[in-house]
Length: 191
Length: 129
Image (tube, rainbow over all chains, first blue to last red; front, side, top):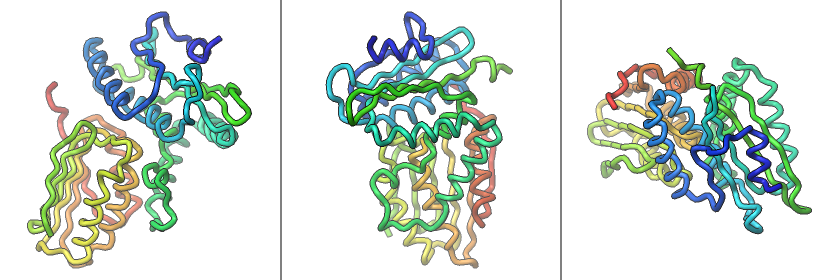
């Protein structure tokens, strides 16, 4: 089974998702995806609030791949991205190759977040902001730390208000394929 | 110092820094992949201004409709810098959010409680689509 099929199975993706993409993730692709998303949600008559949540999660998800994804080794290990509409929810799912040494920390982080309730997620978000408001030592900053506040996954969870579904599939001695999915409940924001 | 005016881009906000009038505005969506590349020059000049404000008073407006977490670090740097503004310099900071946008509002509240700055939260009506 391909990683795309694995991801579809992990998140119960429908036969015809709104967006299904496999290939290189670039800033241009991200902007195109977000533009397509806005047009689709507009056609669906979806609330601006839900569209913004989806927009936000997709941005964080794809920029994470752009920032942390490993160089692709072949067609099968290309990044994948799916946006799907299901009965009561929208699903955002992605897959990308990852340096295996990153797996334990990432797994721990996602497990930690999944164990949190809504209040704890908000507090975690606030704590990171507090930490980042300290005086930063510019000489110690890396390109990644300069452009990331360590908030990506917390932000995705805040917007989603649901838990992450994820899986790691060993690809090679040094790399693993990381599958991630999260949903936005359609009904939560009906007013 | 030369004023800065940057029109809104595909994923970057409208920015206006008028160092003579002391008026600064950040408006719209901000989700560039490398936010620092966009903000570094602005932050650098703002830091110089803050050390010795050339205008009699300073008014800063943040009116984001959306921003990615990558925008957080430069934004935090701006707030940290603003805390160093001379105590006797009149400073007004407005954090605007669209009505019902709890995430942007909450972030303004966090900045308000986590810094010593007087940040005024202002709710704006959602523009007609």
